[in-house]
Image (tube, rainbow, N blue to C red):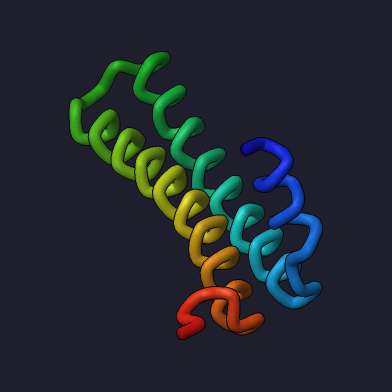
Length: 86
């Protein structure tokens, strides 16, 4: 199973890899901002809205990163006609 996943990543198109990498960089930036907001909340303990904003941004960055990975693999598979063969 793990060998199959590694094989899928090795066979990705270069454009797809570039899109996935840029998407993961974007998600890392959002995650870093969320962690900074949560650290501000921890050290200042001002209002719960700051905590909620930090948690929502953190969840969003995790969902986007998974979305970039899965959609990149699916689009590459569709492009190579691996999905949808009769």
